[in-house]
Length: 149
Image (cartoon, rainbow, N blue to C red; front, side):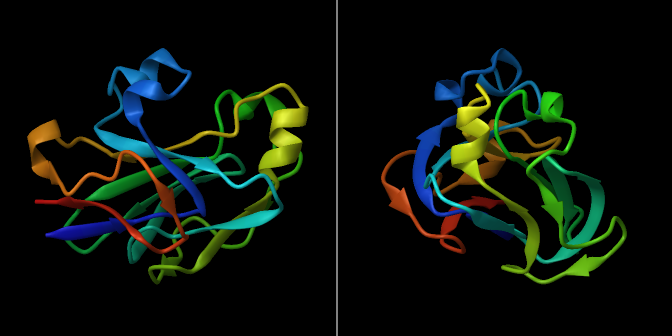
């Protein structure tokens, strides 16, 4: 079983509350989202594993069980063309849970007219494979968000 931890501090919300139909409809996969604290911060790896996809606004880490976890920093942030995001690792790097991956500022994303809400998604999972799903309340970076069987 994989425990997926929060890549950011903020408030846990249901995936259905994400202002994007692809994420809200769980078309990418089940999970939840974080409405982040509006201050410069670092998004951390939600699991230990290999960074298989890395963009300024999103990254995927695959753990030893083959579970890929997508962290998407904000909604429609691909349109910012990387501005305001600093990559701290490279694609192919092995990361530990809690390791810094991307530095960004949710307040700047919001000021640019984008939602800073961050989906955290279990790629290619079924909804019934997830347990202990946090869908409300404040969370700190590194705190458990859900388990994946």
